[in-house]
Length: 312
Image (cartoon, rainbow, N blue to C red):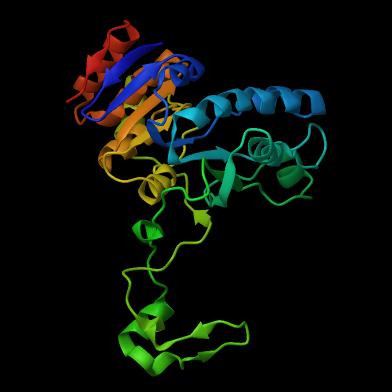
């Protein structure tokens, strides 16, 4: 376990995050947000024994996360869907993860979220493109686990733009609706047309994963360096970092890949720790913190030569 690079607010480690989690002080982390690698799942899932092996592997990390979370801390994990091998039948692994974490490891399910990725290509090819018997798989399950019953959260930090109809309502005051008890039982009061700066978000997060012009991708293409193949969009960790933490809090990503989480945390004035097993991915992730490609290339070379660097 070694530090690859440091910034004003964070540290990026190369190594096994199981080792990192063992070194973190108890109750020192406000939020763990991550997307675990699916390679093990794709390789070994598709059968009860191997599917269970993946869940047990993931549970090892969850067990170590629990003690390092603050009492009001959260653990957010993005899990992509999967099919059973050779059959148009869904795997239940992500739901088994949910049940195991809550029933056996003591986590609370604060809320379930679903990430809708409109830019995701149709898959799986066999059932969607060829036989045309299934819709494309475009939604990930995102479990928001908490350590206690009342984790830190403030939904006013993640308000979304009002709909056009709501904008008209706010502009015209009472013209577009009458305060009354609706058939649903909701009491629409005269305060309904108050402008709160945005609408409450739902637990369906529609975020296209279509990054194309970031420093990270530009530099990896130009320098002929392999980009991480499973990056999640910055707006996904951004939503949960804003929602579940305050400036100065500590955010951790245990499967950091290209370190999207660290970059977002830094931009939001949160302290961060990232960990990734593959040195090349960690080295390339430093590009996210450089404006100049030559500086980024020098940082990459230093990290690949096992030199720890500081990024100001």
